[in-house]
Image 1 (cartoon, rainbow, N blue to C red):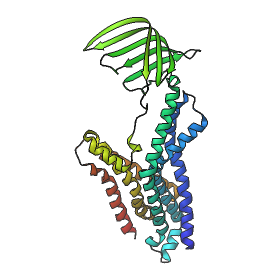
Image 2: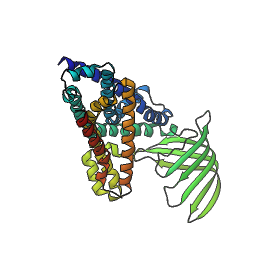
Image 3: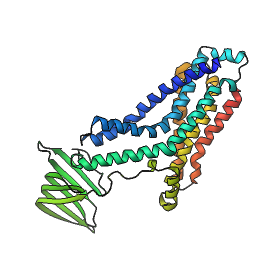
Image 4: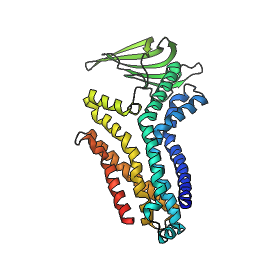
Length: 348
């Protein structure tokens, strides 16, 4: 029990450090994207903190298996570097006995990750979409950032070259395909004001191009006004917001999108069960790699996950093309599991 507590303590410490580091690394891209979207509408620090918290379940589903693999490789790599594994093996401790803390931690993480992927993540992502949509609807007139295509309104693209001291937008380009006759509008300036359930756009000194059937009509104007109703949510529902039951239901209702729904369904279970494969792979891999220490364990862990995700993306792309059945998404997991069993039996 002293040895088990010793290994468990180091495992947990390495796991927490790896988890925090990976979360911070993967969170940067999402936070930068959200901050770019929300910074223009003046969101508060409290709202941003809430958004960061709501993003965590989606990240944890990815980072928990990665952090677990790194923690085992770092721990056993350090034990091997200090010859502690050699002492344990020569005194009669077998690989299954040494690996008991790893197996126990993997079972706990399996339950946690399954709970996140099936329940907590869909709930958090639905809440996140609701919060962001509420902010955008409240302050959509300031969400049009100069130099950035604004595409949150369905079938409409708005680009502004800048803003003046009064908050009016300048050098405007609008492509409006909400109606059968497409419109392309260019103008010198414009003003956005809120109205009930939407915004009112007043554009000055521009040209309106009406496109229909391959023909275009250009109309110069001094003032052009339009109302844009925001009755629906600007950010639509995504697959990560659905529970596994809802994914199966949508797959049956929408045959055209069935492969995408089924890929997401399989991800909800393949990611958590990846932890079990790692629990068999990592201890034996550490023994086979010799005295590489923490650095060797870190490099090995990153390399394994890079190869795994390359195979996963390839398998999912094959499913999307319709060449193979959607259950082909499990192939990378099965290959890694087979490798894990082989290495575990060999080192044992």
